[in-house]
Length: 353
Image (cartoon, rainbow, N blue to C red; front, side, top):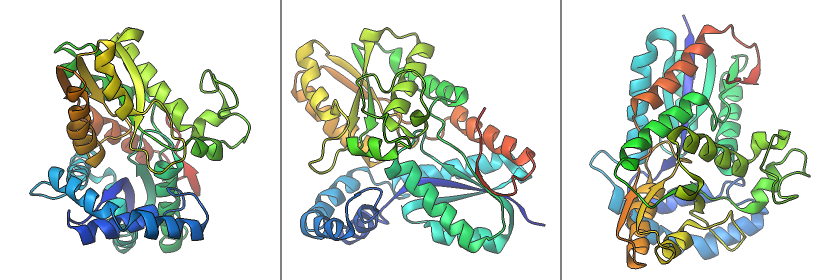
């Protein structure tokens, strides 16, 4: 008899740190219109004339520094999470894992779900916050694949959980050991996005960036506003940890291209903080639930080098939640709650309490 199926989805990784594999991965990743959101001809030119001739070699060198015997840290950790969640939910649902780019691909995993049979499916994007280049693109692809291969099977989607109490608790508790060591400043470094992505994701097309305090308070646009959701996560975490306003700040990393991205930029803040009297720095990156290239190489290696060369005395990157028990428990509880509900009979966003 078909059972409920859960599809965990993360960003992905090259199959290896070799230049050809990295080039193949970057081509797939940056060909996504929700990542490089420009006209198709312009995206082709930018990708093939400016990015792919040089970036694969540099990225391959970065991947080689974080690669493990088991493979990509992101994929390996995600597989461990899949296994642990499956052990927790038991027969309530079959847990599958796919990557938006690279392997295991969404297409191949949806084919496996189809072959095994599924009474209904829950899509679980492993992104706490909504962005068109992360949450939206993976949900759209998964929903399209499931509609094609499992026509008539009810599909629900877990919405961004950036302020869910259990997620906030899991994130805060994962940070406590590092905070206990003492620090001058805690830097929340979120993955950056271009400013125009905020406007494009605003369903009202009138609220985001319309005024300096647009992310404050409540507004329907906040359901798809990445910046608001990052600020909200930070607000809730620091409240739980009892931090004072002067003890932390927010920045954004990993920008690409010349368009203006969310500021302040992490690399600029790492360069400037020692001159402002911050000698002992803690860094956390809540946009990621699993450590990956952007945390292990960009922050832990290059970020530390920037900070220490600027005059810092200690630099600690707080690991992502990875396989933390409270994070696994959050996923388990949401899946159990969904599995216990009657099927929706359609394709809906699963509502978090």
